[in-house]
Length: 280
Image (cartoon, rainbow, N blue to C red):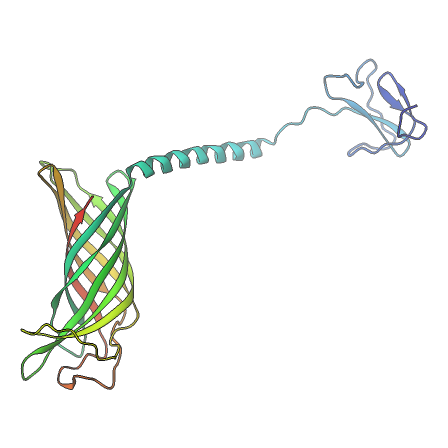
């Protein structure tokens, strides 16, 4: 008798009598080869029973679907390539600092505004992508603003400091006598940190009127060119940029603290920047 089967006996490695269930077996059909099968058959054939009728089914070794096998191979290959690229990219990633000066103003349709110089600085990360093309991200403290002249003389500088995040594509040209010329372009987003108003002219004393003249968020595009010059075994990296704000950054302030040099009701930020990079 075969344990666990009602009325089942074991003969020549097959179950005879009793009940069992097997997927794909049909009642009343017999696939039997004399002298083959049994528990020790290396071909993987095994006898099964369903519904009381004897049915011996040959089960071959499991084979993977060719499509699934191709997908798995492709995923493994992509994983290996991605891992190698990430490892190589991590070795060539560059970090540095940048400092510079902005010539800032606002473009307003209702006013003829002046400009003044303000500081800019922060950190830079450059990630090579392909050949001379790199992705460059910066985190800067950048001052923006405009100068409004008075008719009787003097001016007011309306300034604001922004935390700025430019994301750029950096392209390097082939070096000529150890000088590498580059170009870069992209976009930026910025969030306002502080504001200040300063009398223009000979007096440079900032003060706070308690009013906000600039919107909290700004965004725009950046484009620039520069060169890396070898000096004393180091590289002096200089870049000139043009910055265009695409949003209206000015707030419409009805109660102006300086009516003779009032802040415009609308305007978009504009700047020329001269940047010195260290470590790149």
